Length: 333
Image 1 (cartoon, one colour):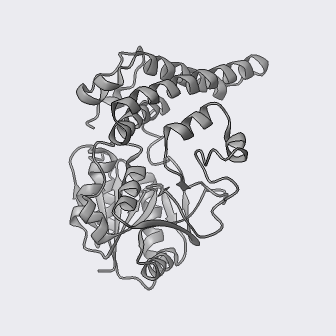
Image 2 (cartoon, rainbow, N blue to C red):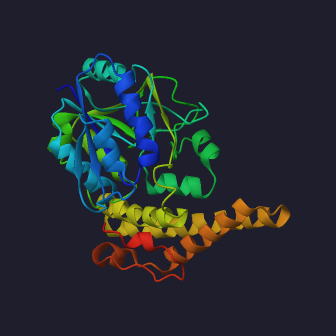
């Protein structure tokens, strides 16, 4: 088997149909299998896949294992020389998978390969970035991206002047489309399951680099990513924002230790305070409903980071008790 395509599903009936159709209609020269790992869907996603795509292997996890663990279940069942981690809210363009496999064959030094990702309107969607670091976060928090580039402080959260139109080595690629060499992925044990949402793709790419392989982006192939339509319809944005805060601390603890945790909290407080201040001033000048919602989100995140003890969060899973209703966050990590 040349390619195993892993699709994680959680109540994704509205998008997975187009995703699977695009895979089968637009892949012509590659021997592939599709494995759908279902995290306890209740919207008839599983029935739809089985009835319309009987060739797809469906694994029913029975509950929401979250992103990393749910994908790992399917990775363990895969047989491909390459494994493609693919979001259900993506559309594969004609010949894209054939091109990506050929590209990977020509680059044995690459442990993972990413392609050009487009928004639904055809505009470029950033899918390759430098690794997150405390230094880069300070640059972003203080709005010093341009000054950082001029003064040689290095890249912040993106590659300045690059819009995914040329081939290059990158630190990491997003998990909406990540083609990974099968033996490398299995050797590394798949995703680190402590990163239940967010940072799991960055962490995997970091481990790929540490294993002696590179991560390469190529614009030869492209896909469309509807960006969040597989999840935003079901969970409030604040739930995802709080998840990202938790996994952010997990990431910095893994690579920077306890000292990194404390620095990560400082930069988060400064960044959130400044963003809330800026949005607040803009709201005073020209009030809008979206800006009002963003202000509320910043308020909650600032309160959460102010109250959190990062060490106890990491070791005992202790989070601040906030007066907001985000029941989705009680899902298993």
